Length: 368
Image 1 (cartoon, one colour):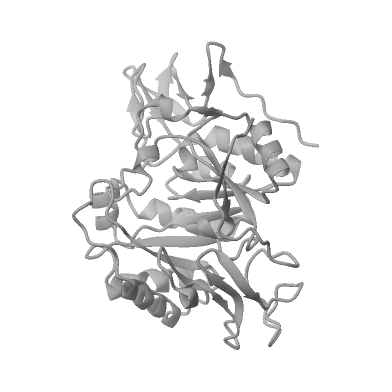
Image 2 (tube, rainbow, N blue to C red):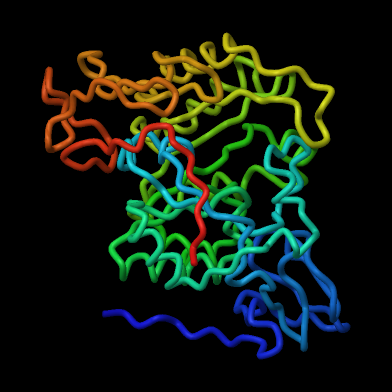
């Protein structure tokens, strides 16, 4: 059995661990190479993500083993509709983020600069054991982006594999090529936020760029065994135009394949975009139709009550395979091999013989 990795930790501050992805660029500055931002920092300075900083001439992660809280959720909330449907997932996050989204809907966590936010402690083995004890089929790195707590996420994923628990990354996919390869080698499923399909949107509203995200998506799809789904939050007047949605869907079908599920979710005013309107449900329905016209087989609407837009259909005969009402599952028409009971066509995904029955419950938990 694989033995746990031993991280070099600060004896006075156990949540600070040494990291690998950085280099000395001279002039008293250290460059972090984890993500495409390539933050250059002097001793004592933190990167934009806030959780990685220069200490003792190297970049350390300052939030190892610390979390903003733990909760058992339905896997569909991530959202993942084709990965162990109906099962419970143990969700947790830390603090900080390497994007600067003006519309962040978890801003109290991702933009936090208070270490008091991280009131909960859990070593990787603790998390894996808790998931087993609580009946969770997987552990999700969510609420903020797991890319920035790379070392902690990798160690938790390894501990979960030893315990027979799978792991899920909910991420914006903004990570450099070398750490990307290591990170996703440990992950079982990912939902990647494809926030828009223009670099203008990414730069203006997230402070990042589109190209590295597209590279991450192609890497996951073609060079790993990670189950992949996509989510796009449609913001009125910013990324909800027909042409942009069509170009995005065309790219997904051509470069990732027609079996990659796409989720279009509704924006509500948040963080620095309180003056924007909510996304009308009709916008999501329109986006779903456009994506399906482009050849995407599994397209969903989110953050609105839309049973038709949340259910899974056979792309061959049109039969409803998995009926959903919010996070509650209804009719299940997949056989034990994950094929349509009506016509025998396989449904893409990671399915068990029967669906889970967790439902819509949300249960905060204590790891210890």
